[in-house]
Length: 308
Length: 251
Image (cartoon, rainbow over all chains, first blue to last red):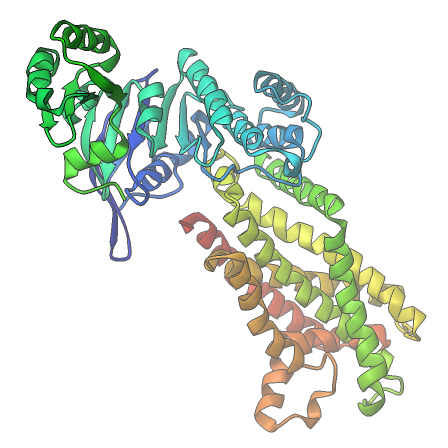
């Protein structure tokens, strides 16, 4: 879908020879820190920017040469909810519908449908100015769906939302994915990519540095970590030895703090076994915790620098 | 057909915004009224004009100043839409590329029409008397509105070329002040230094103000109307493609 795409702004190289394939009907997350080029790539794919070199096709259309033909098939929800504050939610959706040229009646019916689907009927005739952040984001999402696009782009869909609104939005995105649309979303959060995506592409300095399913990627960067604190520091090596068979790599330990770090494929499934084994070995534990890799861990492993 | 309906939708959207933000209309009306009153009563007595009553000289000028300043709103509104990401959404829609700009400039012309009519009313209250025919009056209003429409495209080009709304406001004012003051809007240009007078005489503002003035005083317009229309046409020919190009290229 994307092949050898580059884009600079002056001397800044925003995208460097990006290759990316998104399978129809899947959710792909573009994971990376601020300034990695995520938004630039989305803007290229949604016809807002033309690439300096390389080609990108979306839904069978070349984004640069066939932009006009492509536009009816894509929807974009951005990080700054792009809805008009002074219009009501309904007016916003109807306007977008009319601009897709679906006709007055159809635009009205579709707006009503989306307001119901996104739980915005009570606020439908209020100005967007009075909406909460989560409601705006839902309206923005609804606006991107007006024309039933085949391909949806969500640029950091949950940034700045409180945890509850974020959960609600995740549910909406999951439901959309289940309905069979192709989705490309960008995020800075590993857990978001993990929760929503079938595939994750990690982007840094305008370049895709890793790609794979969430499990593959986490395995590459170490997956989950079981962090064990033993009561008797002298038993730290024994504890490490006891749990080693459950790890995907040899555990790391620190005798001075009684800490053992065990990289595992999937933490939940081995946690019980680890506890049982330590119990059998009569090693008392002060604390045991499961750590998910964060974006920082991913970056540290893949690039050798922190995600800033 | 779609282009037309896209433009209509944009105008509708812009007009709804005005009904939701009545203060926008109020303040864009107060400013020219203030100018009219200040110039009439503060400077009016000290300015000698070839016409007996300063208000008869001033009002045609103020009408043009109103549409000129009003056209600045185009760039500010566009840059505001841009900073909110609304333009991005429009640009991903299968709508006509020119509709956002055309909708904006036409809406601003409609607002100009409202304000200009109001100004003429206020002018009449403080002594302005229209001395031309109905046809002349219509021509005077028409040319003022066309002038505002043309400068809306200049303003759109600027608004789409700067980074944020604050810059759009400042950048909008910089070129408008010399254009407005080095002209025959407020004073006869004959007292200006030679170079400035030459600039003022051929500026689009002076030729248009002089045309409107002649029309409203029932005097022969001569070629002024053609000069003015030539300027308007020239500005449109240059700035419509320029603004559309900025709109498309916008990152």
